[in-house]
Length: 265
Ligand SMILES: Nc1nc(-c2ccc(Cl)c(S(N)(=O)=O)c2)cs1
Ligand SMILES: [Zn+2]
Image 1: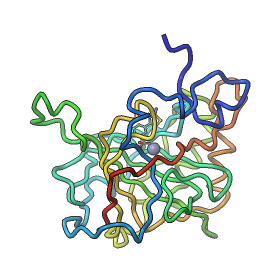
Image 2 (image 1 turned 60 degrees about the vertical axis):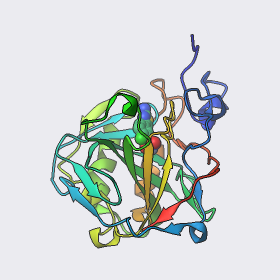
Image 3 (image 1 turned 45 degrees about the vertical axis):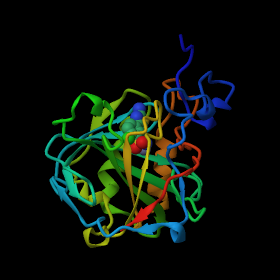
């Protein structure tokens, strides 16, 4: 039996933890179509089928549950939030959103663009409508669609992120959850008109078991957060209930692109 749980490099190298770091992750984690990757923007291929997304339920103001799950901070998204278009074959329903971050402004994103990493990365996770998938389509390569937004430091407070940042104080340790003040997902995103340009590639979950069932969308337009809002994630959250280690650098190392191409809208 596995004697320890999976964790990030920063935890694995801390003697107070006995856990499996990224190079020991099991499941599909050691396979060849993994995420995240570095995107060399001048090597991407234009794909005319990558049209605009249509977002439903994204502008709905809801009181949503947010939890510390020991690896990230995760907002549960109820039914009625979905995406269509964006070169995807069918509707995908949102299940959750979470983030990855560091306290250094060039280390917290999972994906990088031309070798540049950003302060944070937000992932909105969607699942293909549970539908007609036949028996062999048990784990299709596009079972999950993740919308990834890079976050960089801006000089103004991001009002849309206020409910999430203010909730962090209430969920310092794993398995704590709380309700956020009413907010919409759209409040968290860059201006809608700027969501036409994105990168697209086939990859995996960036957490175990790293299933290679994710169609990735990395938007070119970045989210701007004030430095204090970014730092709040590393300052208020802990990986462990004994509060021995602050939750930061919850970022998987870059994976090889291998025989894959990255497309651009
Ligand atoms: N326990 C946890 N699960 C996740 C998770 C779940 C599904 C997905 Cl798709 C992802 S990711 N980073 O690939 O978007 C992360 C985070 S923390
Ligand atoms: Zn993620």
